[in-house]
Image (cartoon, rainbow, N blue to C red):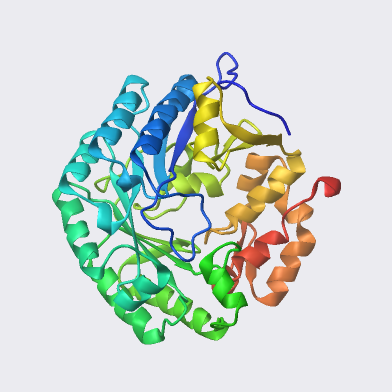
Length: 412
C-alpha cells in the first residue's frame, strides 16, 4: 500500500485512460438499504466539493480521454444548475467532453427540464433513473423520496430533453414485497419503453437500517420468493425485448447505430445489446478507469486505489494539490487475474479462454480447473471449447460462484 500525493505519473507515449467515474456524495435522504458513502447536502459543503472535484479533474486530465463517463452517487441530480455549469464547464476546458457514452444517475424527485437540457447540451446521452419500485408502500419502506407519479413525469421530462437512452433501476425481494407487487411494477416499468433495465436483489449491508431490522427479527428473508422474482424478471424482460447481458442488467437489442450509441473502445468487440452500459462492461472486463470524488475507486495501469469516504477530508486533500487517496495497492498478477475472472463471470457470456489469457496472461482452463469443475457439477456453470460461463441457475448465485476464483496473496 502507498499514498498518492499528486496527479498521475504518465510515461511518454502512454495511451490515455478511456473511462471516468465521478462520485457525487449527496442524498436528500439516506435510503434504508444503502451502504454507499453519501451525506445530506448543504450549500457550503456542496460548493466546496464541486471546487475540489474540478481540481481533481485537473490532476488527471492530461491522462484521460474518456470514451465512457459515469456520474454516480449519492444523487448527482441534486446538484444545482450553477453547480452543474461549473463541473461541465471545467470538463469542457480540460478536454473531458465527447464521450460516446455518458451516464448521469438521477432520482425521479430531482429531475427538472432545465437540468435535463443542460446535461444534454453538454453531451450527456444516458440517464439512469433510480425507480426501485412503483408501489407507494414499498417506496416508503425503502426510504425513497420520490413518488410513483414522479417517475412517469420525470421519464417524460427526459424524453422531451432528447434523451433516447434511459435506464430504469428496480429492486426486488424488498421486505414486504409480494409476487403481485413485483408483477405490477414490472408491467408498468416495462411499459415506459426504456432502453435499459437494471434490477438488483436487496442486499443487507451492515450499518444500514434494513440490516439492523433483519437482525432484530422484524422480518425474514424468503429465499424461495427471491428466486421466483428473479426468474420472473428474466422471463418478463425477455418477452419485452430486453436481453440479459449481466446478472442484473438488461438492454434492448437494437442496431449498432441506434441513437445514443457510439464507439466505446475495446468493449465494442463483445456480443452486447446495443444499449448495454459500456462503462460497466469496462469494469467487468478489467479496463482501466479513473475514479473521482469521495469514496470513488479506480484501477489504472496495475494500481488499484480508493478515495477517502469523507467529503471534508477529500476536499482538504485535493485543495493541497494532491489526489485524496485513502489507499493504493498493486495486486500480484495472479490476484488480478482471479479478480477479473470473478468480475467477468457476472456477464452472461462469461470468459472466452483466449480472451482471458490475452487480458491476464493466465489460463482460466488450467489455473482454475478445480473451481470450474465444481461449478459445472453443481449445474451453475457450463463449458465449451471456446468459453466458460455461468448458467441461468448459476447467475442467481454469481457472487458465491465468483468468490471461488479469487486468489489471496499467499496463493499466487
